[in-house]
Amino acid sequence: MFLRLVCAVTLVCVCVISTAAGPAAISPASPQESPIVIDDNLRVFTMVAALNVAGFDVELSSQYHPARAAVRKIAETLDPDLLRRLKDFYNTHKAGEPDENQLAKYISLAVILGDPPTFKLTTREEGLPDDIRSVMGFVPLLQEFYLKAGVSRVWAIVGPVYEAEMDRIGPAIREIVSKTDSYLRASTGGVYSQTMRVSVELAAPQNSVNVRSDRDDYYVILGYAATPRIEEIRHAYLHVRLNSYVARAVPKVEKSDALMELLKGVDGVPRTYSANFESMLTESLVRAIELRMDREPQAKAQENLKILYRSGLLLAPYFYEALVAYEASDASLRNEISTMAAGVDVGKERLRFADTFHAIVLPERQPLRAEVPTKPVDPVLELVRAAETAFDNDKPRARQLFEAALKNDPRNGRASYGLGLIEMDRANRASSDSDRDAALTNALQYFEQTIASDSASRSATAWSHIYAGHILDFRCNRNAAVAHYRKAIESGDDTRDAQKTAQSDLAQPFGGECRQ
Image 1 (cartoon, rainbow, N blue to C red):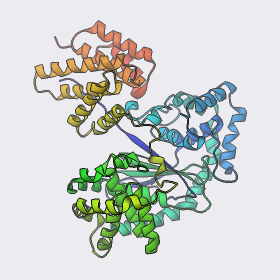
Image 2: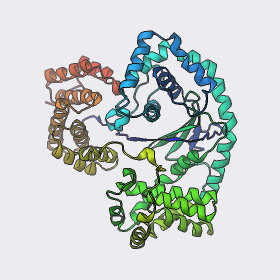
Image 3: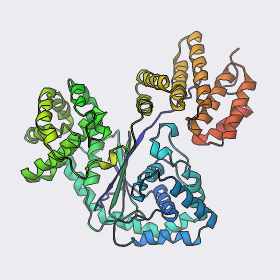
Image 4: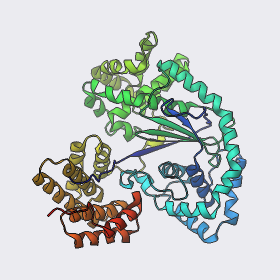
């Protein structure tokens, strides 16, 4: 049987919220006991320290935190050549955005890297959002910075300050988690499909909160704040608690497409919500819960609802009203979500939209501004991203989307690589030699297309050479396989130990005996 070669495609999204915030910490616990983990993050510390010496100089307070001031002094003793290269990279990778918008993509990169000093990427580069992919070249500089700046020594000095800060703000998190669980009527303990990791980063701007999420985890990175405000942590925690239940409840909403049609082309609505019903529904529920928990006066709550509604959260008013009945019951919200979803009357919501949406003045500052795309939407890129999202759980859907992308852009490297992986998976599952041979032939063609593409990432190109070599080894074409392994080595890319794999395959044919 052909050996399995396919790894999961993982997508990441990022949101930066700059506010007078300073959420909190609870005692570290196993994910099996609590969905929250509070810990130090040396990867993030190293990344933020490197950015500080590279030129990132945003501060949301009147002065630096002492720990940040100490970190910035690293520049005074750092190798001048490395300092120049760090500054050059930072300045040339701003993508036309101000300094305030730079931190998010670097922190998002940091949390998906392995531990120092190697900082190896722990997921597929081709499945990452473009803003993170755009700074992947910073990783070699980060490795060099960690060693030459003596980051481990610096951390030994400032680490206790970080621990003291987490101790200080710990009670605030314990309280908000307890209140949130109480409102949700959620039991503690058990096994969770998602976790939330909270870290303090004193070398980041004060009063800053960076929230990064993928499909399994939320990461909350907190700058120092004199008065902890924990709204962002509560928001992330609500997602951790509710996302999986909402996903199962989405099919209960009838005619959801008709509701989404209302948001097409509407100014001030993030594409996150105008293009994805599940995201819109989930965020509507979470925001409504927050309003109910805050117990704001009715007039203020309604004004906040209007702002949320105008930003595209069309079900926020519905959930705000439905939660009144939930509060009067004894049920847990986990069990009520499907009932609430089934109760959505799209006809009534369309009438609500017609009567109120355009009468609401578009706020000057959007509450979800960080999620608004800053560049025109590329339809092919959207197809590829959707395919990568569907890859793990719905390969027929992923195939359909990748093929649609290739139809519009025949040289799209991400699409051809995705189809190559799908064909490899089909070969692994084939019940007959003829089906396996057909799948391997298709896979080889897609990997060759990826190699020839100008848009494929370095890691996709390197692994396309390796996978092509595996197929050729399997078919007893050793000379052609060796040529591919050498190309993978020449690429220099070492994502997911590509160099070690290629060297091993160069020394010995993949899979042992070939198939005659």
